[in-house]
Image 1: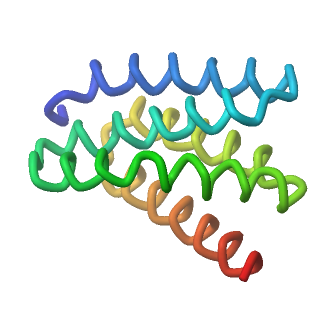
Image 2 (image 1 turned 135 degrees about the vertical axis):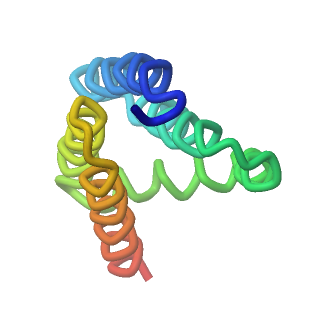
Amino acid sequence: MWPRRAALRGELADRLDEMRRAHAAGDLTALMAADRAFHAAVVEAAGNEILAELYHRLRDRQLRMGEAGFRLSPGWAEVALAEHAGQLAALDGDDPAVWRDAVAGHIDSAATMLGTLR
């Protein structure tokens, strides 16, 4: 059993629900805030205080960039929701490699999306 998995799974499920509600309401600001909270929960669960502090310092920039990404990349919100659901599902299994692959895939997708905005 991975340390902190149950707590992380509950937190991510809550944030994913917030993202879905915000998306359904067309509220990109709330969608981005929930997305960022989803990511923050993952960073904090890693237990690296230095990384978590750095991540939180970038909060305002992440919110601005993320909301712009949702606005300028049609379909990105649906991709992010699906990939976050995949990460959540990976926590239900017993193979940490499935989790790592889900996270890595999401990072790759986000990098591709952000690269198209340049």
